[in-house]
Length: 520
Image 1 (cartoon, one colour):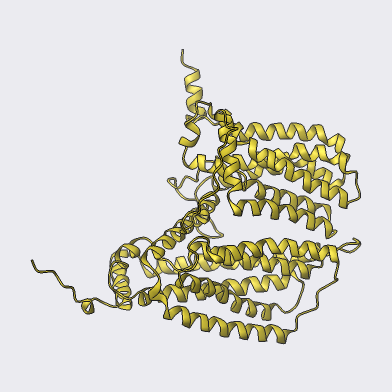
Image 2: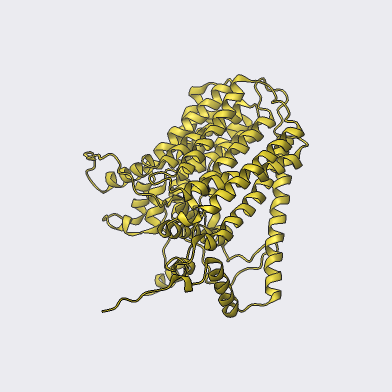
């Protein structure tokens, strides 16, 4: 029997295969030039509005957070530096989790099995990464300069435009080299920078070195030129090695990127978190524990929630880092409203890190239904671990605020202990919220693309409980009211928050319930 020989030279190159795919897509895609203009207008207008709002809010924040009479202060320039470190860490971490190079959907099914060269297939994606990183880096650089109160926004934007592609191309270079089989080094670097930023701000406040020296414009320009040269070298070196990426790596990274893009398009923050949790590396074996204390469904659920949090480095880091934010704001001598806003925002973010079990149970309801417990009872059990963690978290944060403000710490600890479960209740409520319904007609949005009805109500489930039910604690932080007077109000607000978070709505709806109630 003769074997079938395939002449690979007869196959189109990667560039030709991309061109054929583009022609086929245009032939079957339909659309018109007017649709293209409308889409471009929507994107450009949305970006312009977002940039204008961001710069306006940053300038306002810069003027309002300048302390005047506090003995210990944090200069806005140090705040801008910390914000820049966070932005760099988040960018590197996202690049490591998303790829940055990947091929998803039909392209992975049709392109990768062919003998076409990977370099010709992936070069446009590599260039797109450079363009996007330049734009994002320039915007973040200008924002950091504005937050710092400096006038060198243009040189800072140029330096950011050069730093962005360097960071992304460095991550792409590790991907081409096949690094990160267990834990991607970019993820580790990104998480380290995210942790270092609040620690840097805390160290600056404690040491009080004064305002940092202004960076000369010439230094920013020189640094931008050096970074641009490094970016060019990384681009050339990565482009030459694109054929070394395996198809499995490209499929896995493309699938994660498509998942995250779908979550962003549907404005679903919960799905976005799930997408960023996915990793393409091999699972590392965790230390075995006999779990001898598990004796029933309640202890099993609580233990499962605790294990999910403690075995996730990202979640543990989030709880610790977000606890530093209100402390830094307090040490900086900023007004009470800033401390309250920092506590609410960082507290809710920390609570989200403790409710991974509830989010997984919403995605796979069998995790809750496998136990013979009522749905409302299951939600109460799911609230135990987050409430315990957030009660301790609030004790530390509010206790540090009271000590730094010269107040009696012991009188504030009961109020903090009672307020902690409110943050957990908001996170659990957000974890079990229904996804956005995209089957109904979309609502026109003058600020951007159309949105589904009820989107704001869906997104606000969780934060609404936190903002409303933490009013007694906020009054104490802003007005420094007597904590003993606010304690009973906070107890009632916490009970309401827990009741709302553990309530299971009837899927039949109010109309069906009323109709059944009128039956004889």
